[in-house]
Image (cartoon, rainbow, N blue to C red):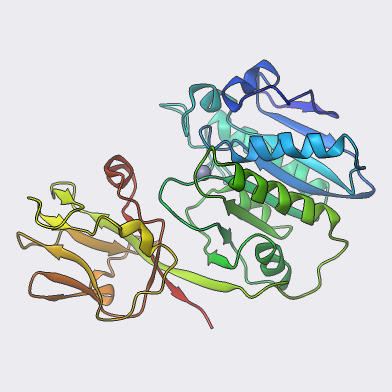
Length: 328
Ligand SMILES: [Zn+2]
């Protein structure tokens, strides 16, 4: 996996993310010099179909046409082959957001190489730009509750998910030596999301120093577990449909909304335990999260769901979503 290193951006203005290989045939690391030399590390297209970072980069380049760069930048252009396919990752190859820990593949070597360069540059901050599938507000994954990390988060969104998982993400690796977040910018292809990503980057480029506190009120959540659906169970998302477990059609509207203890989460239509919750270490905590009242599956404690999706393929491949608890 070659890493191309450049010290200028080619003209991106007319290049769609799927055509990224016309300018970056391989993953690339671009160093741009700014007034403050301690760089911001920015990663884009780590997931090939999440185009927000690429579009934010195009906005940044247009802005730089008549503004000097306030702070140096190190820009990583991630999975260009997945972007070409308009897919999260290349089938049969690793997910580029799981390769930032020790591992055996050429992709792990690439990530290690990038990490060493970025670490050596003593970065001011690291931002990894992503989209997501379900209807979520903008939120950040943050890996430490250090004041700088929380300030970085607050400049993007009032919603922070404090987690070290899944293992091997880019921002978690960067958080070993600088404030780092994954900025989850909602659906791909939405101009307002691209603008929000660009605004975040521009704000951090202009930031002189960390103040030691969030700039805006911030809700920090910790993850209780992932909600898994029995692969045999038939899921339905409308009332009265035939299935084994029924969720409301508006399930995704619960993302980042506090749901009280005792509220209904699902209906279990044919008995059994088709809905389970497991922690990041694989421990089954279903009994701490849910109780049964007749056919209703109710929340045992106050929870805030996140990343709930009604996309069956996404649920089967990954999970229904996450249950979080507010800290503090
Ligand atoms: Zn992603």
